[in-house]
Image (cartoon, rainbow, N blue to C red; front, side, top):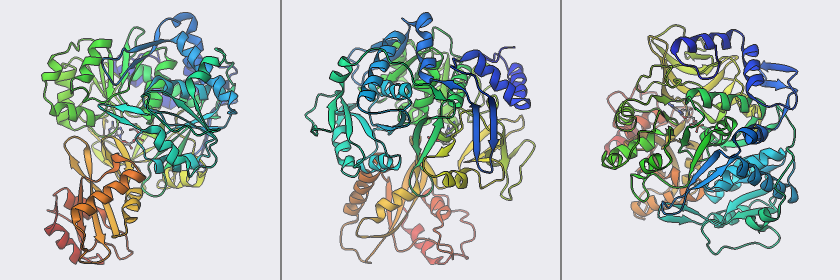
Length: 635
Ligand code: 6R9
């Protein structure tokens, strides 16, 4: 029985049973057979969810970039590792072989070292989807520096918060970025962020758009001349399996973003093993994940998972709508993509444009389709299946999180029969549980509850940077001895899971997790605003859009509401980024509150979604009278 390339459902069940009956020997076998270690582990797993503390492959020594690059050099040196497809289709795509990738990563690693970066230092990467992004991530890993990639759509304030939280010494950025027909002044954003970050004394700048930018003497350096000068080989730093590999921030329901810390050995094993099995990657395949490396999907399934398997992975700089809505299909045809992994929000946006764009392109290379980021609605699922996969390519609806590091509940392509809107079965080694509100596990099928995981898996985040207590409180305190995901789920009659969405105050807009608190904080900074509450409401393309209820300080505010709306969205854009802008802003005289003063978002959510048939008991509210007023003025 092969643990890789599981071929049918029965084999899945066999391997699954093996993986949960004896997780340690199962993962030990995978780790031994498929990876390169400088020293084997003393102990496969030790764990205690009450602390919480989890260690995989303790005592083992490795460097993940040797697994992603060096070990392929003999057998796949001339194979393309990364295909870079630029924003502008007239610019030539770049094919970077494994040998070239080795050269680029080593040079970059040497530049980092020459600039004082060493093992354990944090480096913030704020780059568009250009090759330097993947290369800088790997260069950090090569020398044991901890990368913290910040999505290049975040604002200066959001960037500064993240740089400061993990005390980054260096920022890697570019002069600017292309986004469809627009350019974005990334370096300007970095300059603004760094006004607040005295700890950063080194900025490396990649040239992408050739714009005039400010280079601060003694701090900023152009990257390319340094790379040209650098030596083309770099001995990898030998890391412990439990040494941190990266920090990646994710929004919480309250407070500041959480810097999830992922470690080296377990993350490598799990991201690589899931990649190969879920997508059934074969040697000649070209795999394309449309995510940005600024999100966990890009970390695990553009960079680490594919490269560890010696795959060819596509990096796309642009957007699905530029120069027109046929761009994705054009790229699939051009590079003969076999596995295509995208988000429901992109599928809905493309479906809205009709099928004429699709019909112009040959998509016959596609074997497997994937989705991730939010629940996929039935209509979008069928559109994807009928028009993109022509009902021949299985759809893997992969549920997972920044915190989980890798795919957790998913079909395995060709092995697991798919079912629209269902993420289907737990991946090998994953032990889900559905919990009721009293903290009891709900057994059996045809049930729903809150989704927890009962047993550690290799790529789980180990802590929140600088705040282990928050890690414990957020994920391990709701239920005894279980990891709580924040999602609700149901289990159907055959044991398939369907994720029903967040049960906390995180709202997923176009696949981006947004916490309500930071957005409300931004709004409340407007001098005219007294209080605000944000909820999600269904949106055709984005999945959810944001609806804000805002109360103003003086009744009879003389300024025009439309101006206020603009100013509020401007504040949000400055503090978080344009992805968090509100679609609708309703000014109200009050917000419904419990007697303990908590805003009842549940009611506001129903009103915003036009679902006011059953608002539940509102008589216990502190101010039930405001509900009617809000309903009368709903937008
Ligand atoms: C990988 C990623 C995590 C949250 C997660 C859930 C939602 C992700 C999903 C899905 C339904 C899927 N989510 N995949 N919901 N079906 N296939 O997206 O990580 O950005 O941390 O988001 O996204 O709510 O809890 P992250």
